[in-house]
Amino acid sequence: MMEGIAEASPRPKGVEMTDYAVETSPQVCARLCGVLYLIVIVIGILTELFVRDKLTVSGDATATANNIMASQLLWRSSIAGDVILLVCAAVQALLFYVLLRPVNKNLALLAVFFNLVECAIDGVNKLNLIAALFLSGGADYLKAFEPHQLHAQAYFSLKMHAYGYAISLVFFGFVCLIFGYLLFRSGYFPKTLGVLMTIAGLSYLTISFTQILAPTYAGTIFPILGVPAFIGGCHFACGSL
Image (cartoon, one colour):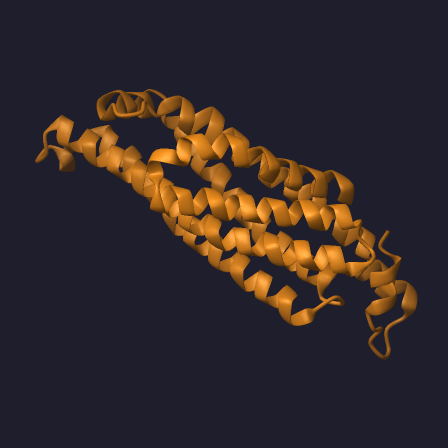
């Protein structure tokens, strides 16, 4: 599947072909990219669906704060998991660039820039999750506020995180669109991967802008469009292994 990209990559002078092939093997890059994609998917599901969604009680700030304090280690672990996810996503951006630059170097580089912006926004956004933890804890320096005020602020931090994530997902949607186009045009990846990645990008963009512009419908849109986005990512990850 990857022979074309190997031929498209020039060999620097003074470097033996065997050594260079091992160092920049497209098969190795593709498989590592697939592994990282699987890690990102698994961590994303665990932290969002099995931690935050379970501990957050919609419309009830006090119950949410109590749940966070009762599961502090779990909450902190989900934040640590998100940080690992972002590290994997940054490495994955480089691998995508290496794999797809023979198709169009400028577009591949643009996708990397979008990906790094997405990681930066999402990384800073995780401070909202830490703020929710601190505000739920009732430390001495917070006694100037009433408990219900702190709980409301903690819940507000979680709402800010949701919107920050939606903004970061806009950039990731464009990443998927660019990579989908490059995968489709590559000739050494199955065109199906490009189509599915493009569908995933459109799904992410729709979900994000729905969250920003019409949040009332976000809960309805996400289960519908989240499925093709998930399938596109899984298909790429499994197809690269």
